[in-house]
Image (cartoon, rainbow, N blue to C red):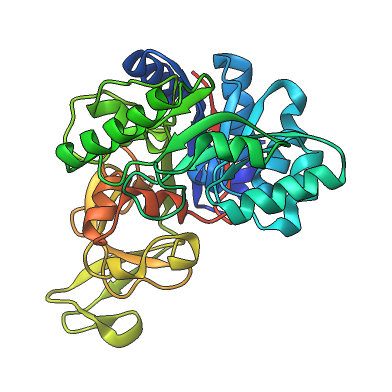
Length: 362
């Protein structure tokens, strides 16, 4: 299968499931509690089904977080009723039926959604478990902590809160505000004597703060990355490889790619690598980034194309294997993100499905 996948295209992504498993155990160790493994956005483009099944089978992960009903349905159909699936994003009433039929725990963050879901459940004479989301400073989704907890439960009697959560806005950069958010959330829980599951800490929160709640929600951490400064040792879980498919020999003054944004300052060889912005390699890395060809650093030359990039092969043995490391041990998603003036989340979740995934386990 591996050879067949590689044959489909010279470019492929290697996903190390053992690394994700290691990172799961690190999250548990740091938090001292169970986790909700965040595998939304196709497990940050590592493969929702493959990651979910591996964590369930080999690391006893039974709680997963996704963003949409469709993501939840895909996971439910793969893992059956053995796992709890939390849909943490907004869900429109059009999808209540599918969510209920697949036993997905929806997140309720406002009275309008609560009323609509409660009405749907009453019409069908059923009840459903839900997550309640509180807004402690993110100002995106969620009730304020001034919500009437007892009034909520008495008004929406077909909703069964099994999990209360809030979301940190700057756990990687602002300790005072993060502490303020955690205090506000904890005070709400104590005030109302909440007995169900509670969660607050995301990946950076797990790495930088003492956990006060019954669950944590690692996302980026699972895949080997963390925002902000920390000394947590994780394992990167994805590497992207390709190979040089053609060599062009330039003379001094020749230009490369669309817009002629690279001009050769000497006679030189450049290599064509079959990966581009349609694969998730950002166009803004034009003349900024680099790859490693047979472990030698090679600068991206000229405009990143939809399907290809060109790289400077100066100093590379052109009779060698010409294997290209696009992302991996030498240049990871965090470094690519810095060069692209973005975040590692965007790099990882932008890796497109037309790059074949090859899964490995130690």
